[in-house]
Length: 341
Image 1 (cartoon, rainbow, N blue to C red):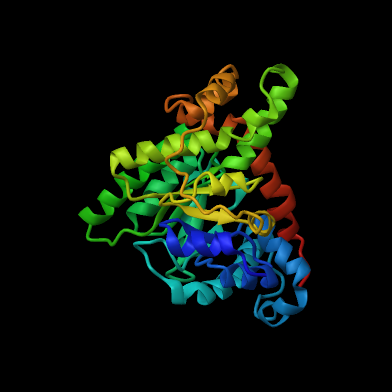
Image 2 (cartoon, rainbow, N blue to C red):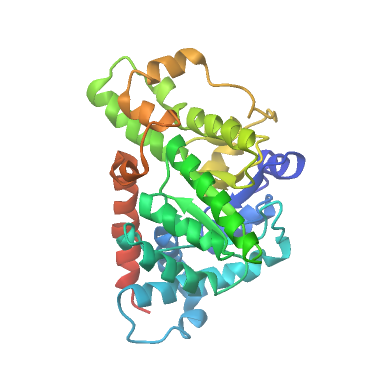
């Protein structure tokens, strides 16, 4: 179905639409409406292999039998991402962040720097337009910088806060500077902020302890954080793209329209955007200060919103980090490890 808002967003603004699903039918609809890149994660790869089994049958014949653990999961992820890497290649434009597909490292090793670097090297070797997703933990950001220094395309995911994306932006700048100093061409760098997943976490915190913070405030929390981060990225002149992801409502895209961001948009959010009939760039429209004031009564929001709200060693303990890592393990990585093909 035609999505006029997404077509406007992707053709009339500097915002770039990346499709957030590996289901073949959904991918085709997304690209028909302006998507020029794809995000995947262990959950999404498992989802397409389960739902689109017939579609992947021939490709799966090339996956060796007898593989186990991370080796097996990597082979299955490779099956899906290399196919889509070819699909998006015609859009390839490194300056604008177009024509890429993501492959994610193991959520079982978010504290092991060398493991993540080694795995990222393997994933990156599959195709020149693969972006390797690493967690925005302290260790993950250390690995991210090293991968950027080696010229890989990298995205920091499992990220929900201003302190996290600022640490990623700094790491990307250092890594790219090292790459250039060594005669290596820098790759694409992305800092994800999972706006809706932050809202989900803060909603539970508000219900438990902060009754004066209402739903109208909560649904603006992630938006407020990424808008603040966007201003700081621009002030610093960083060329790393921010990526809103984990969206829960049309507002998460509508309120960021016009931003020079790579927007990860899932099919359910695209469906909600079909009903949007006002095409307006709103990235420079601030979140209501009264909403910010109420949210600031919550220590967990302050951690997410203030640039110095958390130290890198605290990133792995933030509530949203634990929730999302658990989902990637139990609903993505582990099911792939036991997938029968």
